[in-house]
Length: 261
Image (cartoon, rainbow, N blue to C red; front, side, top):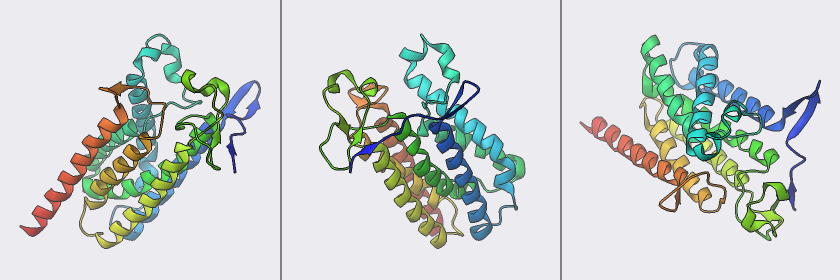
C-alpha cells in the first residue's frame, strides 16, 4: 500500500487557499483542549473550564514559540526571507518550541491562579501528546517530515519538488510523520496509565512525557533526512531531546527522593 498525499491545499475561497496543515492543526488543538478539560475533571481538582478559558493564551503562545524556534534553527533561510516568518499555513512549527513556550506559559498561569504547576503540566502533557499524534498528519499533506528512500509497502510518495537533491531519483520514502504519530499515540496511553496510578503525585506524568517523547523523537530522527540544522553532524532535535531526557529522569529521581524523605 503506497501512501500518497492528495496535496497541501484543501480548498480555495476568493483566491485564498486553505491548507490541510491548518485544518489538521486546528483539529489537533481542539482535541488537546477537550482532552485536558476531561482529564482535569476526572483526575484533579483544577477549576472547571480552566483549560477552555485559558486555551487561547496557551495556544497562541505555543504556536508563536513553535514558529520562533523553527525559524531560529532555520535562520539561514528566514534571514533572507523575513516576510515568510509569518506564513505558517504550509508548515514550519517545532514541537520543541511549543513545549518550551508552553511550560513557560503554564508557569505564569499557575502563579496567577495559585495552582499547582506540576499538576497542570501533568494534565497538559497527556493532552499535548495526543494533539501531537494528530498534528503530525499535517506533515503528510505538506509532503514533509519524511525519511530515507524505501521499497516498503507503506512508503510515502514525495513529489520531485519536495525531495532533497541527493534523492531526486527516488519516489518513495519512509513516512516518519506516521511513525511519530503512532509513537505519540502509544505514549498517550502510557501517560494516561501513569496519570491514573499517580493522580495524587504530581509531576510524574510530565517528566515521563519528556523522557518518552524525546526517546521517540530520537528514534524517528534516525530515519528522517530533513533536519533544518545539524550540530556536530547530529540533528538539533536530537540534542534537545537528550537534554529533555536528562531533565525528565532528573525530575523523576527528585520526586522519588522527596516521596521517600
